[in-house]
Image 1: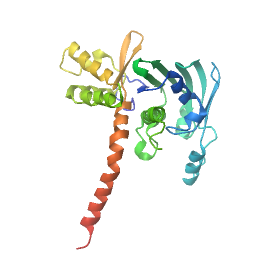
Image 2 (image 1 turned 135 degrees about the vertical axis):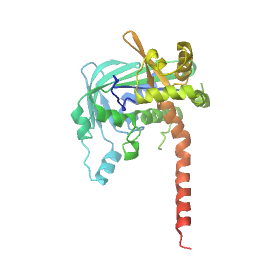
Image 3 (image 1 turned 30 degrees about the horizontal axis):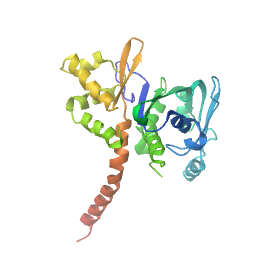
Image 4 (image 1 turned 90 degrees about the vertical axis):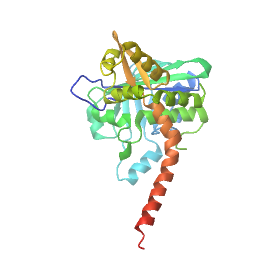
Length: 175
Length: 109
């Protein structure tokens, strides 16, 4: 949420955490499997080569293509790209992350996302998403959900709330 | 920690003005140390720690180590969950009600 800056030192890191009644394996699958990734949040098909140096690409869903076409905007075939830095299933995933749908965010280059999944009591896991956004103020505003009223979606808080809803009830918030 | 319990602890955490002030401080600038937060409040260090603990237990604040420091981050996901669960349901109805009112008031008499 470090989208507001003043003259003091500010961190460009955003931290999000959600508690989900699901196994670590199920949460890991929802993050890394394209059949799951298109079912919540912004949708889109993730493709992770889960080893250090492996590629991350996200392709748009048909719905995203159709919606963009209706707005007169052609969506690129790869909307997010990055490189896997660390993959320790089902507990930790670190990648670089660049959003290519918007010229502004594409120009900001690669940021870094860490997912941490911890098993807790009573069948719950915590999922923590750390997004290091140094030098990427445009993307920071987008992923914080600050631009939702302009049609940019609710960012990470919305995606994680939807992911929790999908894993706990079998249905996303929108569906 | 079933679903209502989760949101119950969020509402209880938000019920206190000092805790809301701490969240406002983190919204304005995230990733602060206890010492930084303490300097904004006329309260003992122990008092601020107690409030931060309630916020952490409700999931509204996430503390992370960075070197020797412990940094506090605002976690907006629980507030988003309240929004998704409660606000969305009512917003549409309110908007419709307002439109009806507007139509009614602007009707030529």
